Length: 109
Image (tube, rainbow, N blue to C red; front, side, top):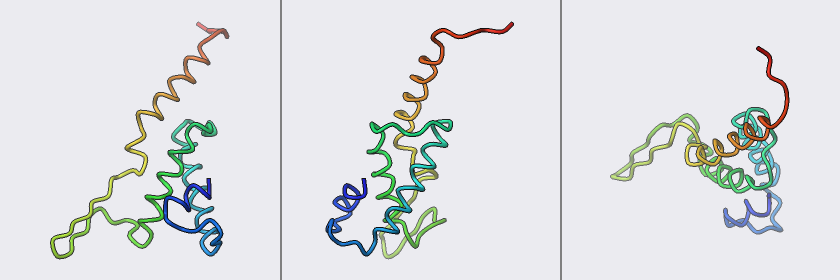
């Protein structure tokens, strides 16, 4: 996943100067996604979400807490959650877990 992130950011795979920071960002994003999934570890199929949100977080270093920014006609606005664009996929995964959990089991009345 680190190599994918470095490629997207235009960092040579052999360049290890930012590896600690990038690994921390990946770990942080993975932990947040796990929380959004109700404590379930993100499956490999969701690695693209981790990488893409890590890109957003990396590019926003130094602008943490900023909701919007305007300079000489250029305007930047940040969403409330870096995961907003992926909530449909996250909800779909959570729904599939609910369906799997509904098979069999006990119901107490």
